[in-house]
Image (cartoon, rainbow, N blue to C red):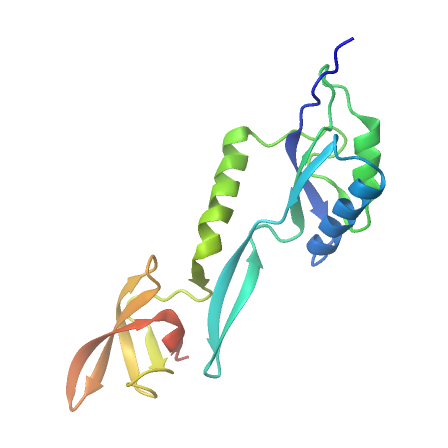
Length: 188
């Protein structure tokens, strides 16, 4: 008799909004308690770090790519594509989980889609993305650096580097100044 390797696939689980981390922790904890490691794999909440300046204070927060959802690598179907009741009820009975995206017969995420999401998560681990984006012609107030409290107009935006070229009036002349997103705030 040969033991077959149970195939895990990626599914999207709908959670109560704001309860993604609690739902994930509940699944992880229960997997160990109920010896479900063979059926339940990785559970992730795709996130990125974003920064913003409020009242002159720079803060960095974690933003979810898909609020209200977690990704689960689980064995939901057997090799004949029949629903695995043990896995189904384990997930359905988890605190904070509303259910599977796709209802009674959820479809796993295509491999290319999950690879894209996981690559985005990995890329964004190192980079802190500005929460606010700027457009050319936006008026901004400089909140940090040698031009503190000067107003200027955004001329160029470089979202990859998180930098702006801002035209500032100095000594009666307009001068371009390169600043980071967090060094300015939009003037309403």
